[in-house]
Structures are given as structure tokens and as C-alpha cells.
Image 1: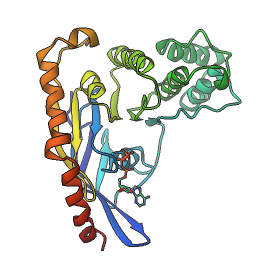
Image 2 (image 1 turned 90 degrees about the horizontal axis):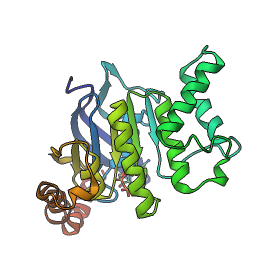
Image 3 (image 1 turned 90 degrees about the vertical axis):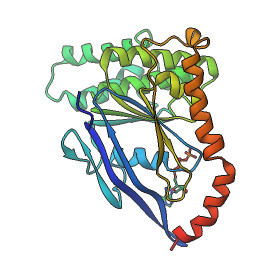
Image 4 (image 1 turned 45 degrees about the vertical axis):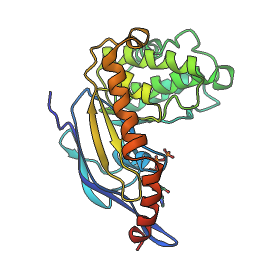
Amino acid sequence: MTSNYLELSDVGMRFATPKGWFDALVNVNLKIAKGEFISLIGHSGCGKSTVLNLVAGLNDPTAGGIILDGREVAGPGPERSVVFQNHALLPWLSVYQNVELAVRQVMKGAGKAQIDEQVRYYLSLVQMDHALDKKPHEISGGMKQRVGIARALSLQPKVLLMDEPFGALDALTRAHLQDALMEIQAELHNTVIMITHDVDEAVLLSDRIVMMTNGPAATIGEILDITLPRPRDRVALADNPDYHHLRQQVLSFLYEKHSKVTRLKSKADSKAAVA
Ligand SMILES: Nc1ncnc2c1ncn2[C@@H]1O[C@H](COP(=O)(O)OP(=O)(O)OP(=O)(O)O)[C@@H](O)[C@H]1O
């Protein structure tokens, strides 16, 4: 397993604003191995989505660069698919057709039967193969998110990017989707970067948690290895002292080392960052 399948080197992002330049990110360095599940966590506005957008190729970094599987990331591409908090299914297409559209994108020239097999495979992975003909408005928010994940996976991306994928769901639905994602991960071994605000979710799902400092000029503060054995069971973890220790380390980073007080200080610093 190479530890630099995806590599962010000295990445910086500076936005032009009406008040001048705004340094959102500075010196972001991160090496991610193939098949690794990474969570990005940090206070609101610290730059998590900016990192994800850079890896997605939606923005170009203003400093440094990003290499994926030996190639520099330049612009968006199907090898980096994104799942957003609010599913972006096409409302006039059925569940099946929404995934079919993505499958056709990566299986150009494939026969109908081959495409059909792929569409059904990815929808069965997220347990949505019972609702192939339903339209998005006929299914729940959790189901829509499942279809969104199936669609993103069906692109067979080198990296799956998830921006708070379960943020809009109720706690029970969220737990079901986290479990589904862990099962899929065990089967497909995707390389994943997921943004979350949920400490328990980050510890449950991740191989490493990347904790970001507060902006402006945010960067990676600490990286925590989550060594809990897999498969992970949320109920069993509730009694696991290692789980509680890891959880505590994330909470300490967020609320002691980089709490709101630090953020107020950073705000004063921001005047220096906005040239
Ligand atoms: N296009 C832009 N132009 C100017 N500033 C921007 C732009 N995009 C993001 N920013 C600023 O960069 C900083 C990081 O934003 P970003 O959305 O990445 O944070 P985040 O950690 O994802 O926040 P949240 O958790 O609230 O979604 C913020 O201060 C934001 O206002």
C-alpha cells in the first residue's frame, strides 16, 4: 500500500474578496494511502470544503499542488466523485436512471446488459435495489442519500469525496447510513475523504482524522490514527476505553487547543491576512 496515492503538497488557497486577498488555507500537507478513509474535522469556516473542492478540482490551489495516483489534479473528473450533504439527484429521472447516467459515463461502449448489471450492483450495495423505478420525490432523505452514494461509487472513483454526507439526516437514519458505508468500504476499499462535524462519526468510520486549525490561514493541526480494529460495531464501541480515549483527543483538539477563544484571536489575526 503506497502512502502517497493522494498527496497534497504545501497547498494554499487565497481568495480575492472585495476587501482584498483572503488566505483561507496555508501549507496544507497530507499524504493519503490507497484505500484509506480520512475524515476532515474542524470548526465552521476553517476551510474543510475548500480542501475538498481543491481535491475535486473545482478550484485550483493558489500555492502548492495535488497529485492523485501520479498525476496532478487539474479540473474536475470522474475519478474524483463528490457526495454532498443534499443529494443532487435529477428529479425527473428514476433511482435506476440516476445511477445509469453515471454508469454510462464510465462504461462508454458497454452493452445494455453490462450496464444494467452495474446499476443493480451499486444500488444493491446501498440497499436500494427494491426501489429502482421510484422518482426522487417518492423516497425519503436517507434513501436519496443512499442513491447519491451509489451514483458516486458507480463512477468507480479513485477518491470518493464526501461533504457532510449525513449532515441533514436524523440520528437513526444517519447511523444506518454510517453502517452501510462501513460495509461498502469493507467490500470496495475506496479511498475516501469525508468532511464531518460529528466526532463520533469521525472516530467510527475513519482510519485517520485530520484536524484543522481555525481560519483564516487554516492548516492541518493534528492527525489522529484511529487504530480500532474493523469491523467496528457502534454498540460494542460504547464500552471500549480506546474509543473513548480517541474521542476525547478530538474533543480536546476542538474545544481546548482550538476553541472559540482561539478563534476570536484568529479573527484579529485575519486583518493581517487580508492584505
Ligand atoms: N469563493 C470564496 N471567496 C472568498 N472566500 C471564500 C470562498 N470560499 C470560501 N471562502 C472562505 O474561506 C474560508 C473557509 O471556507 P470553507 O467553506 O472551506 O469552510 P468550512 O470549514 O468548510 O466551513 P463549514 O464547516 O461552515 O462548511 C471561510 O472563511 C470562507 O468564508
